[in-house]
Image (cartoon, rainbow over all chains, first blue to last red):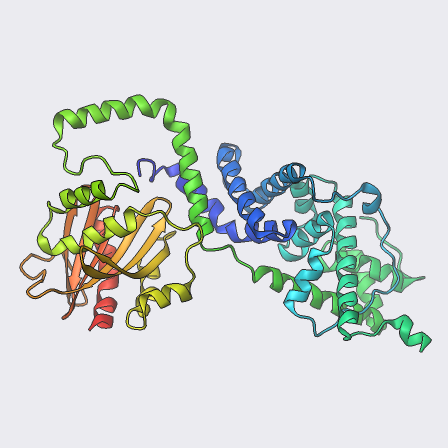
Length: 185
Length: 287
């Protein structure tokens, strides 16, 4: 109660708390674990508050929080050690220009999220930042701390893997027939 | 980004640049070339539509997930605790001086706050604090301190259905009323029927960090009324009465069969404002 009306704290809460849902759901999707997302989110806000003096009012608070989020995730990732890192060789794989398998129409949101969870974490992060949170390549590059070219390759690979996983799921459910099977029949 | 030359292998190039086009990251000239190809290629157009649909569906599916309701409260708690940590170094001597001044100059009314497990000390504390307000305010104040204040809150607050079930059919309509009446940032963390000193209460608790607001409702005992007092405000013809004890502000109003209280550690005016926002609808519901 003694500190309840600290104007700097009020300023921080007004700037940062409206983005709590965005930060939480990205953390939950990247980590694939809501409990860990809870912990990470609390750390993100604590870190953000500690460095709020360095934050320039009027700049993009949302991008700043996402940057702290990915910094925190990387910290946790080293701590947990069980989350697979993507090797650079995988990153620079050229996306095949051949037509992708068609994405089935009758797929549920749950299927979509399950397919997204199967995409390696670094690729998934790029997809979440650009396709879901609508950051520009430049912002995503600053948030992830990687060059724009890496964001583009991760994004391209992530989207392609997502489409492939969905098509695979659809084949398992019998919604979509394997084109090879079709040809051989 | 270099401008690709569309022409030979145009489908291959279009698909390679399709994702950047969807992210609005292509140069104007490249976008023009890509769109020109799309006009004459139904396969690539279909592919673009499929990717656009997938992107929108993915966005909607991910955005449908929201943070659990307890999380903003936890975050605020952590922030405020960390803030206290920052100030601890110099707050200790200042606090010591304030305590000393209070001991010397102020007659202690409430005394120290008892521990969460010390029921006997809690009862004494409640009795001491409530003794300073008119009898009719005491049920609301006592139940607030007993039920909302001396409580360890679950990490995950019950969901809306659980709260409705605990309030029962008769009172569950109180839930949607409280949200718009309390200041921004407060969330309902508890809603149930409870008993204190043999009396039944309907109790809704809203929290923002360590700050707590209660709406407490109880059936009137015979001759129990605020009418002997002077109202502090009125809302749509409902007189609202006010009192304070220690750090607590109490605002009360009544219907034919019920007494209702807003109790909080806000300022008196803020507490009265919440009571005024709620009184007409709550009274109608209880009538």
